[in-house]
Image 1 (cartoon, rainbow, N blue to C red):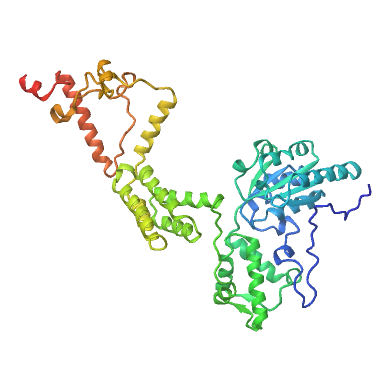
Image 2 (cartoon, helix red, strand yellow):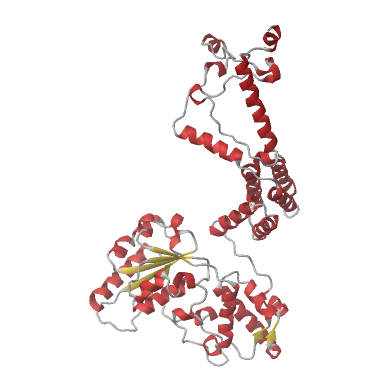
Length: 473
């Protein structure tokens, strides 16, 4: 088998950044592809993960490339990083997407990698985009070849690898978390495109003022690819209109060229849970401003308002509880209001409930108490119901003395009999401990009063005696 430096595998996506447009012609490849970084120094916005001094960078510098999974949002640099890993180490780069490929293609790539390794002594970096789209059995196809070093596997995913990847495969890879690009990083990328006209192919003599750049960056939502697509679209429109003489574009020009930009939000993926998590934590943390922001973010992104309403009800019980019993009433009312009105009218009721819950006194005492009771049962504290507490509404039950000895509280002073309602082995167990906040402060006082009354009656020997018996004595 002949080997050559420019040999491309069946699935190789070779770098075509040098195929820039000829004068006056449309670009052959998108701007984002033409400006893909060629060195780590050109990679913007991921210093913590792969910058100088990072673990991955140190491994690369010592030529110890592990199999790795890049986990991050779209447009953060996952594919660019994979290409840089291959170029830095001299590995042959083969890439395909799990969206359009299957095990058959994997086997073909592995066979090709083995031939390259055997005949040419060249290793292969296999880049699998959207690796979470492979099911568990498909992921198993990589295991022996990662294990024996046939390929260095680099996976890219927007979903949490802990949930989406086979544990056996995940244990053989390092997970590197990449973040959405910040506004400063996005502006650097845009400036690079504007300053390096030779690589970008953008026309000279055009720039953005502060407002125009802010508008360009804001609509990218941390996605470098989206940013460059937006930049290219704005420049193309200005060129078509013959308006490049204006040279400096403002926010209005950007907005006019691009129109409204849809929010990034995957109702079945990570965004769905992350934004809801931020919303719930804002309610719990007492921040109505943040709660309204995340609520609007979900609703504007097309989230199901009924699911949002259920989470508001949950927060009312879990995080406010009996510190303010009206919180649950507000949450249920908002859910019902939305059911009746629908969108957009009913969404205001959700906002009202969110603000109420965010500003209400907080207590998770009931939540903690219920979990403690569940834990007791899970640990085996499962006892029979005492006979005097059993149902005695039929003849057989009465023959078995079910209900015998039960003391009806209303027959006693202050409706307190002092009878134990837990199984005997658990007598005196405390699950619920009210907080000192809001209405639970009153509940705590009530419980302390009943506890004191029962203790006093027990000490006086009057516990379990009816009103009439106490009167006769």
